[in-house]
Amino acid sequence: MRFIEEVVVDEFLPTFRSMLAADLRERGLTQHQVAEALGISQSAVSKYAHGDIERRETFVEDERVQETVERLGAGLATESMSTVQALIEVEILIRRLSRPGDHIAALHEELVPALREYDYDFRVEAHDSDVLTRERVRSSVRRGIRVLEHASGFATMIPDVGSNLVECLPDAESVEDVAGVPGRIFDVKGRTEVPAEPEFGVSEHVATVLLAAREGGSDARAALNVAYDDALIDRLESMGHDTASFDVEGRSTAVAVERAVASNPDATAVYQTGGFGVEPIVYLLGESASDVAGLARDLR
Image (cartoon, helix red, strand yellow):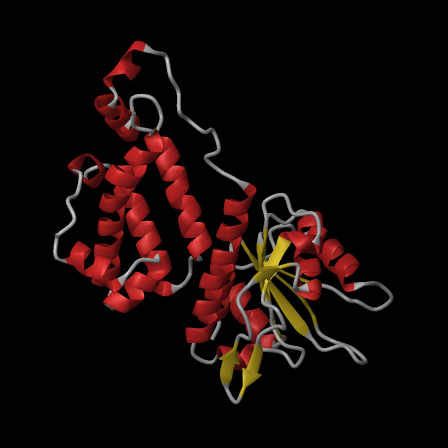
């Protein structure tokens, strides 16, 4: 008797790990780094690298497997993907390959011929999940952070109150549905300092602005606050971006932003020029954290 889980462990995982280990090595990671990323021993990585592990060509040649290996390799190599997301992505791939008639199911049937006589189905219909969606958002913020850390001169764009880069879930309703940087992003002697990995519910202010912009009709999923500068607004407009100004006097920032965006839902930047005790700020809006970070980089 062979369970389908045994087919996964004995037939699929050695091939998949071998492919992913090779991908990571090609991206410049050491055997030690690959071992840490995959949660295996360095000796196992060495075996994969030297071709000592037999690969099943059925999996090697499958485009879905190849695409998953490439996506995970890129994410793990740049640390823009968490190990949790990588694990979930592989779980989803395994479920797809276990559908009746697909590779894992076919191997199972080959090993247990009696299954051909029955109308069996080992599928688990959970090809997406809240956990995966949240991990994808956190990874997007992580990618955006990497862009800001390597963007020459971004530190000069950070306001005195600090910046934050946030991205929300598709159906976000509260700040708990928005991922951001705990403690904000600061300028430390001309260097962009990110104190911790992105988490949900840690950015009260910029998250609230993003949610307000969405209430006003924006399709934005991400936001970043930067220091206000007349020249920056001019550059944005010269690049073809719509902007909208708001005044917080007598009302909350959230209400002011919502009204400003309602007047122009296509705005990719909302700003206020400051006032008594209020620092002038620009909020950049976009489809993802990496898109917003890229816009900030291009404004330098």
